[in-house]
Image (cartoon, rainbow, N blue to C red; front, side, top):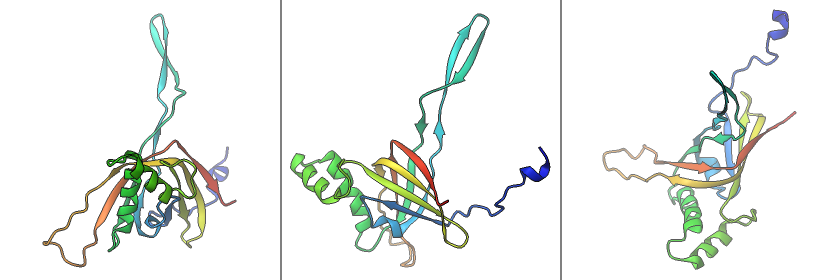
Length: 175
């Protein structure tokens, strides 16, 4: 193989600020999302025992890391409250009536009440969609505190972190 054939066709580098994140269930977060990751994964290994040596074969059970998102909190706290309501529709601390009410309010698109699909759209330097990462059956497992502090200035922005689990993700290209 010659060096000419190994030269990438696209020399543009991926930019960390060119993305949009959208959850089917919590649309208010899309505009306010500040950071999100494409989770890594582990496959593991399956040991095969031989006399005198153990050999490893590729594992068959993939495990994804968590989907982490940081978002700004709007003045009405709608972005934070949407995720909070999602938690309550799953755990229902006041009973199953609350769970059913909140789940029906939030899950108009999804047939599965506790889950939501999500899409990360990665943009080019010219803000054109390059590809999408589609996460299936997401659900929240953590929502960070909101901290009010008189030592901060009015120009400081309150952010929150949310962590989600999901079944798997796919890449969708715009080709």
